[in-house]
Each structure stands twice: as C-alpha cells, then as structure tokens.
Length: 168
Image 1 (cartoon, helix red, strand yellow):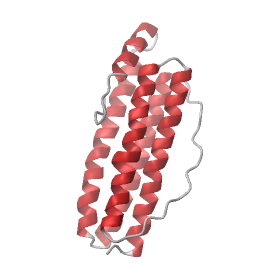
Image 2 (cartoon, rainbow, N blue to C red):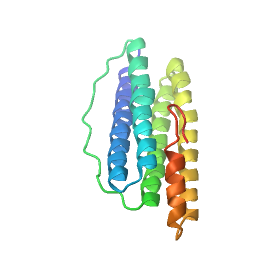
Image 3 (tube, rainbow, N blue to C red):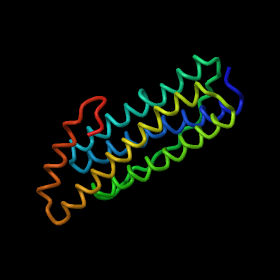
Image 4 (spheres, helix red, strand yellow):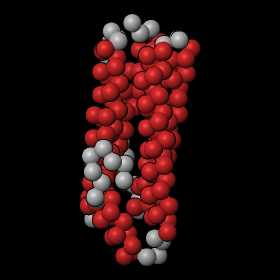
C-alpha cells in the first residue's frame, strides 16, 4: 500500500500531467489559428501522450498499489503563445518544470523507501530526458529559420509527420 505522502505526491503529479495535456491542446488550437497545421498536429499528439501515456499511467499505478486517486482542479491554460519559436520555447520550459516535479516525486519515493514507486518513476525520468531533448531540438531548428519563413513551412510539414508514440 502506498503511504499518504506518496499518494499525495502521485496525485499532484497526475494533475500536472493532465494539465500538461490541456496546455498542449491549447497550443494546438493556437497553432491552427496561426496556420501551422503540422505543429498543431504535433501538439495534439503531445496532449494525448500527456493524458494517456503519462497521467493515466500514474493513475493506474496508484490504483494497482491500493492508493486512492483524487483528481485536482486544472487551471485554464494560456491561449496566446507568440511566434512558432516562442511556442516551442514554452514547451521546453514547461517540460523542464515537469522534470523538476517528477524528480520531487522520486525524492518522496526514496524517502518512503517505496521501491515499486521508484521503479515506476524511473520510466518518467527517462521519458523526461527525451521530452526535453525533443523540445530543445525543435527550438534550435526554429532558431535556424529566423528570417527564412519558407523554412518554417518545411519544419511545420515535418512536425505534422509525427506518429503516435513518436516524439518527433
């Protein structure tokens, strides 16, 4: 059985993962309005991954360990994100915050000597390395396009080719 402290930490992280999905869905809507359908599709898949792949993974883990999931409020995300490069800078910054949050949950698992939680959270730690790497690569690609709008269209098309389960 999960300790109360561990349940609180995981419930908090479930909220963060679901909120991340909501943020990425807002980014998708914004990108559609800016005529970046490829980047919008990338964000839709990211939103799905955050909800199903991350939030629900923790949800199921909590239930399988006899814990109680208590869903928390999700704040309204921003709706305006600036230029395409600004959107992906925001993605990178957000993923860095998520990484810090996962690390805090892992610290609770260490302190509680909750070995199954440590193993489960190692997956998230590895996933966050990939999430940050992908966002940083996209930011660098977009930075290289400054002053070359035709290249933004090519990157948008490339982002739209992302498949379910694929970061790029």
